[in-house]
Length: 223
Image 1 (cartoon, rainbow, N blue to C red):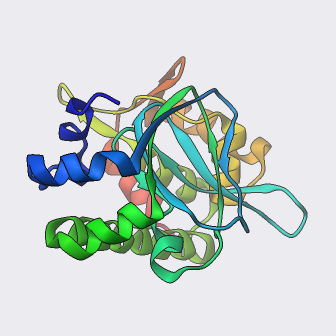
Image 2 (cartoon, rainbow, N blue to C red; image 1 turned 180 degrees about the horizontal axis):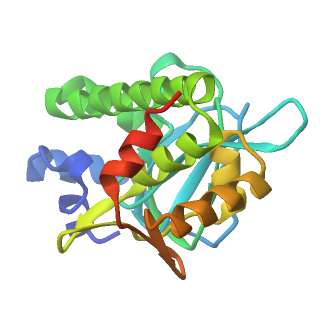
């Protein structure tokens, strides 16, 4: 593995050259094709994974065996740390949405590095807090907000400001949106169509432009 890769990964940005050199044997660079399971719920936790390129989804099956998508992950995001900290089996599965390059960080290397580096420990803690907040928002959304509001909130959460416009650069297919917000694909399709007719959004291939972010935000908070 090229040592220069580690310097570009935010998780390791606080480590010295000597710490990176010691850490390198604990890391493996791996390639995964599209629609590949990197890990499955219930498996033994033996590593943390860091996405260098590509996207993946975190999912669990519901009582009917259908997928419930918990999160979408992209470059520089990581997963698998929870089981390394509490020594429990994997709580969810992770599947690639497109071809991915990843770093696999072994459990022994992770624990050793965590003990010796406060900044890295803080990044892990901040990531866990971020995921707890996301879980709180999902619970609130499912309990209090209708499907229209859930779709609006999801698009807002996934958008980023580019040249003064708010854009979802790689919008999930409607079936995946449905799995993420606990609704049917047909309902999601109707909501997206209505958002376009009202002039709130514009969809172009895989991109969605938020044309009226204020109205979208109001709709996302309606109960």
